[in-house]
Length: 226
Image 1 (cartoon, rainbow, N blue to C red):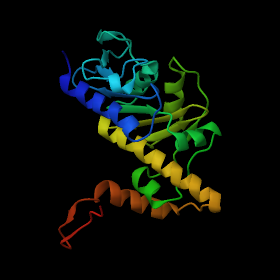
Image 2 (cartoon, rainbow, N blue to C red; image 1 turned 45 degrees about the vertical axis):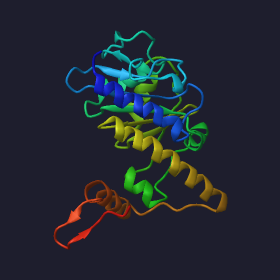
Image 3 (cartoon, helix red, strand yellow; image 1 turned 135 degrees about the horizontal axis):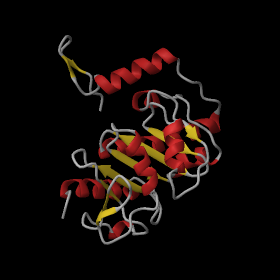
């Protein structure tokens, strides 16, 4: 069996989707790209999460042809591949219909930087792309047109896509965007949230991405908060 480690990593990430309440039934999928061969491991289509194994993950090439696997690849394979083919830095892609984030997508609303948690993780507004048809490259095209520097995008009337330099980072973005969307929705029931100033967004993003969890030699104090 080829790409055993990547198969296991992608399987574990797929299993994390229901664990974190990000999917229902067979919806949602995770893929990962092998940096050496360019091959992609992705969840099989229409299989219940409790039936997934590392062995039944599907391996496809950059054109979507099955290289190894007895099942058909996810119906979102073309979207994943379009991202990989246009973003050489991306090694993991996650797609969910998580409730709160998808509620914003349903009404075509982006999620501005209302919270330091959004600044930390995303560094910018979580954008909402336009509606795109399912099954072909249209979704991937709209993702690339609208995602900017964000690791997450809401797709209008559809759901959530997240990307990362690894499968784990893409999964982290998927978990965080749902948590953030829930908090923002709750805040909107109380009042109108205010966006953080740009300088605060930049400062929080830099701290979290480059110094969070590290030891500050100049002060002798760890910046890790949790």
